[in-house]
Structures are given as structure tokens and as C-alpha cells.
Image (cartoon, rainbow, N blue to C red; front, side, top):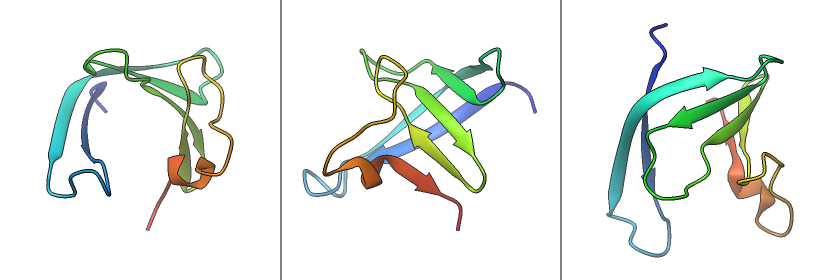
Length: 78
């Protein structure tokens, strides 16, 4: 592992064909359970909580996203 990432995103429902690719470095927090992506554009939160076979995209304060759309911020391994 070389400490780099590549993230491909698209915003479903807004412009399904538009895909953005981000690359940069990442770091782990002191607990080893949250990864911080560096190199994203603007103030896009780049924190993810790592779990078994899934990760949770966290908000800018490092908290899990709650509410009706919370399930859409969980990335599951297929």
C-alpha cells in the first residue's frame, strides 16, 4: 500500500453520465478506523469510517450521516 487513492464519483439523478475522478494521498487516524482523503476539490468531506466489508462516508465533522438518505452514504463491498 503506497498511501494513495483514486476515487470515482457520479451524482445519480443529477447528471448520471458525469463522472469525476479524484486522486491524492490518504492518512489513517490514531485509532486506525477512519481514513482521511487529501486532494479532493473544495470542501468535500473526505473522511470514511472503515468497517467489515463496508465504509461510511462521514460528514465534514467526522460524524456518520443521518436521516432519510443515510443508507446512500454507505459503500458496501460486492
